Image (cartoon, rainbow, N blue to C red; front, side, top):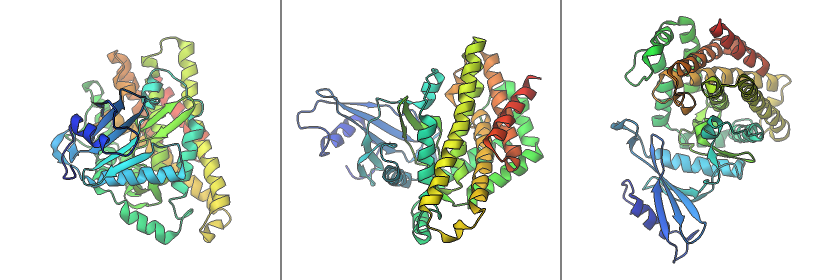
Length: 405
């Protein structure tokens, strides 16, 4: 079965039977293809005679959302598997455990997280995750610090950079986030009701300058090994647990890109709330909770990152007085800019978010789209001037207030 071809559910079962764990010879296996993403097949294998189960994820040689006209390298499956193993080493319990892999078939067999829910779905349903900011702050601090020149041997880091060059996936990001939303492009996707907003994106010179600077950072600043697509659809959660999945966009890039992705998706959910919560008090409480979560994600990351700098720094020159503060300031400003770019592309680009697309009332959905664009543009334009998470949240508030007026 080692020559590449997309597996059928029956072939996935046959593969599962060859593994030493977790199934036994008398297991009664059932398979469902549960992938709802754009790039992969995902098989959920369960034993009907026990509570044991696994996930088999197989990369497709094209983007499923478009078809075979958009070819993709299968090397991303090897990259994703190795990233999961690296992240598990740095943050055990915060990513699914890898049980088996086959690079020829571009597949990975991993821990089943069915006892968790996709965070995006949970947020849409109004669930609270009081430990999320602490968990994701720890995850980002450790994975970014220990794969950077601050926390690992610089020559070893260069070797890792070579192993995790990911041109196909980076090209998707470069186009969808830093190019196509700002011009007429075939893959752009937005409702006719916000055509004026799309036109404004295409003609705003100040915005284009900031996006060009962010794009330059994404192209050239190999600071740390990124997850590369760290949104709420790539995170499984319970109120007590956080598990990060799907690092197939991983590469060496600017730290703020991962942090900004998390913050952007929390803000997209924040922008969607009036479309689903009609009670004014309940709406205000939920909005406050989301903004507090944004604040906490950054502060938890920063405190843990600074602690690692004090205790685990390997670069002696990074001990220079003032360098840590300047470094963290740079990461924060990048975070703000990338968060804004992520928000913009989710409204006018190819792939949207269910937080907003699931709003049934067209008027409320349009308001959420315009609010997201207002916040996103404000963060992009102000990113190089921001110094604190409080200032970032003030920028969000000002953008929303201006829209209402």
